[in-house]
Image (cartoon, rainbow, N blue to C red):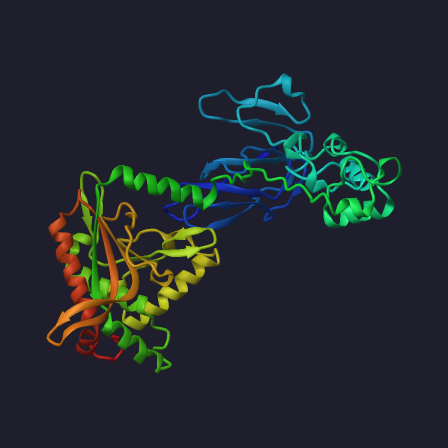
Length: 440
């Protein structure tokens, strides 16, 4: 009896997975545990294993489809076996493998063999052969064939008088278009005639490449639009004295136990300590309610090859500086390697996005909904400051806070920023007060 293979559930927060690439085709034999496809959740990439053995009778979804978890994705059974596909709102249909397409109506897409059509661009074999015969470089031809390919007639359109063997070889080697008439006997094109006619440069002003929006990029795009559509976002920008940050970083580098603590870790630590005083910013806006959390689950925006991910430091308010630094590196590495679990990438109560390493001074981060605030961290620059000694240039770090005006007010956000700026400027004194007996 034919069996259905379902899209497995990935963690408690994943509702659907986007198929990135199928590893099996209709007619292939599979065993339990074979990798059927790779898919992306809104957090990571997964491999989906077969839960049935037999012949693949049908693939129910295509690459790029967003498949709800626990929905059938594949039919496996005996070769030639009939099977049924259930789609909400339609009657079940009995489908016999090999049955003519006109004899049935398929409620879901059934995969067809991959197309053998040539890739876009390039040239046909006949065009290449004629190019070599006539001594006309392919780069000189204007493609008129399907999908932008150079066909035989495109090369023949440039043909003129015959070329001497030496002229033919040089024209192909140097990419020079031979003239229609040469100076040889009967108009034959000689080597000396090629020098007078430089190659025609063909520029396709409409050249472009289309990339499908799918996988994590599609999820990010949807979430960003949803964030801006459903929230009232306001951003505040400020600068914090960074001298304490730089001094602490320099001191930590000298100690093997703390050498891994970065300026980003120090800023995150200051953020966590500030959030304990401003619980309104450690919250989710849920429309009819605002949920404030007892503990701080700090999301750290991480750049990966697949797109932006946000691993979560659960209970970051309970961590020492060293613990926070170490845990951040572990989770960020798992996200970049594509092995982070969905539950490691969901549930943050406040997010920090740090682009200081790119030299960005300030920017406007987009809320990681349903959080009510997100902090953007910029680079460290020298800023002129009026002191008792006159104007001095002092290191400052850029800070940008975006908050949801539905949940918090601008004045509250300004007070939060002021407290964070002060906390960063005096972080060395805070650490001294806390002591170094494991707390730091």
